[in-house]
Amino acid sequence: MTAPLKYLQHYPLSLQDKIRQLQQQNKLGDYIAQRYPQPHTIQTDKALYEYSNEIRQAYLRNAPLLDKVHYDNRLSIEHHALGLNTAISRVQGGKLKAKKEIRIASFFKETPEEFLRMIVVHELAHLKERDHDKAFYQLCQHMEPSYHQYEFDCRVYLLWKNDTKKVNG
Image 1 (cartoon, rainbow, N blue to C red):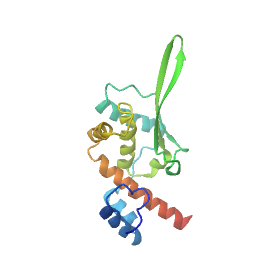
Image 2: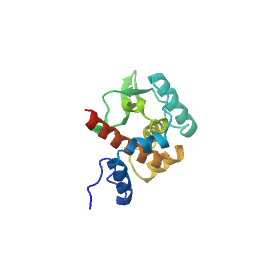
Image 3: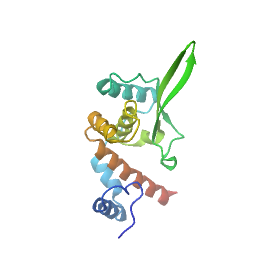
Image 4: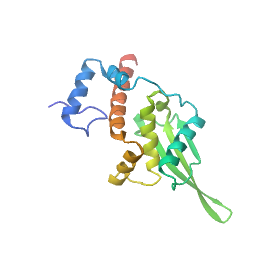
């Protein structure tokens, strides 16, 4: 039996074996490029905020407004965080105000739009569902029917980028 692939250990071994075979043939990049040929153009924090808010408006109208959405250079796969959803509470006058903020790893500036959408949907789902449970993933799929495929392919992309970094690094 072969060792599980980094980022893919929770997937069936048969699927891991297919990805391992592509990896050994140096074809992970080809797999990604064939499935996701177009890069996205959402490069600024303002564009990311607008993009995220459009999705929130379409699917989560009753969710709290987003105060801030931005790319964060400090988030990375090494820190086990590609996105963060925070509520910063402050006392203003006699009231407690919570500011909703989403931070997305800057890594996603260079990925296909589908992967950016997947992580934004993931973080938006946390506005309604805190835990990674069945209701959370159902909400993710409601906002993006291909959520699970994008998540899997994003993990393959991470594996490919990690391999590329080792070779070039």
